[in-house]
Amino acid sequence: MVATRQRRASAKLLSTRERIEREAITILSEKGYDAASMREIAEASGVSKPVVYYYFKSKEKLCHHLISAGLEEFRRLQREVCSEGSNDSAGDLLEQIVRMVQARFDFCRDNLEFMRFIYALNFGPDRKKIDYDFHGFGDEMSEMLTSLMRRASEAGLIRKGKEEAAAHYLRGIVSAYVMPYMDGHEEFPPGLARTIVTDMVSGLGT
Image (cartoon, rainbow, N blue to C red; front, side):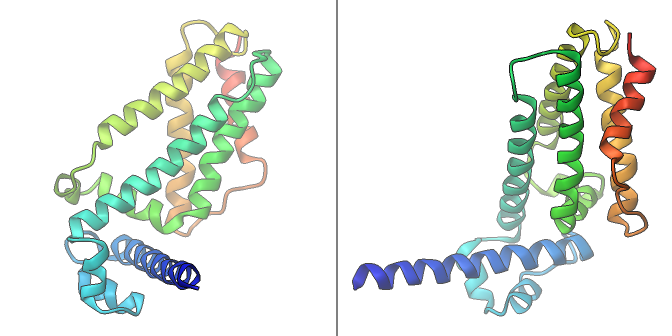
């Protein structure tokens, strides 16, 4: 009976924490780091301000947690796709790259407020106020993508020496579609990931 009460209490606490995280992301994405307040986050979450501070000791720690958790999920999804399979045929690698690009679009669609928050923070003046290694994360994602392009090169999918160019192209073109999507102007067209990858192969292929 005690164990049951403890499980129910834990579930309630988890639900409260998740609600705080969700509302915090929304408010931070709309107002930015400086303008958002813990009071607003508490009100939107339906809890008192001391409850928010129970879970997160400061606004900076709350933001750091949101960033770390969200980017870790993105990292996990990209690693999962990039480590798939051991058959490095050109056809298999083409499909793997398509899945990698699609995973980026899916993450953006499923975590729209988080993506708006990250872009605003990463490219705005508030970036220096959060102790998170955005540069290191970006380097890790670049290396992961470039490594996949090296495998594509070995398979004859793209020309030798064009691995970094292919990685830069994919990052740039994905961002070019993500930005207007986050702004509410465009949806991701069906088959977009495949179109992007086949266009890349047409331009940089052997």
